[in-house]
Length: 102
Ligand code: HEC
Image (cartoon, rainbow, N blue to C red; front, side):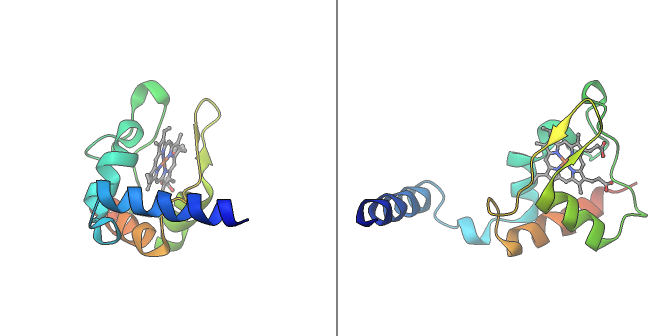
């Protein structure tokens, strides 16, 4: 237990050394580092992976749910980001995705 706490603290420290302002990372930065490889810079989706473009008809709630729980299109699976990104980061990246939606 004590060891786990030490590892957790060391991980937090290491993360903060690499990305000092991680909590303030913008939606665009999160998108570039974690989403762009599948969804492409303009959000149109990687055709080879059969990822579709973000749609303007998707609601905030739908986009947030997919980001938190993941999604799949049969040939490609997206992991959920709940627990990997904070709620604030998910909100920021969803706000950014909406600027890309067609
Ligand atoms: C490994 C590839 C991959 C990565 C990385 C990835 N996604 Fe996805 N994403 C998919 C696939 C596949 C789907 C489901 C099929 C589709 O919509 O084309 C999807 C669907 C979605 C949807 C639902 C689409 C809609 O129109 O409702 C959202 C929202 C989404 N992703 C957001 C994100 C965000 C935000 C990130 C980064 C934090 C991310 N994705 C990272 C592959 C990925």
